[in-house]
Length: 125
Picture 1: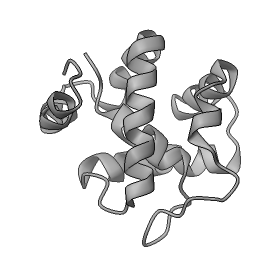
Picture 2: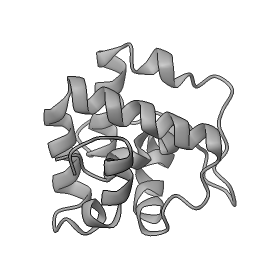
Picture 3: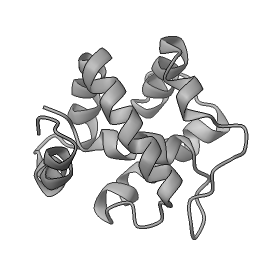
């Protein structure tokens, strides 16, 4: 099962919370997902199990809103990043997905809400 929180992982990794999520120029999703240690540090921050960078802190705070409003403030680049991270985590780090789901989607509300996106991406929901 792919938790819906993953849909927002990259979008929020890339963002600074404002009226629209802004992608800092120094964030490269492709480079991040090549480095399990870096991905894990973001996961630990989001789960409140480790230290956060300023971007990580903003990420953690933005997730609930982004889940509720279908990432309304995300631009196309952030949505593409979300897609990449979903595939990466699903294929390589399913345990991290489970941890994220426990924290952000315990009752399955968002997994159900975003089921159509999982199906579109040919991922198990």
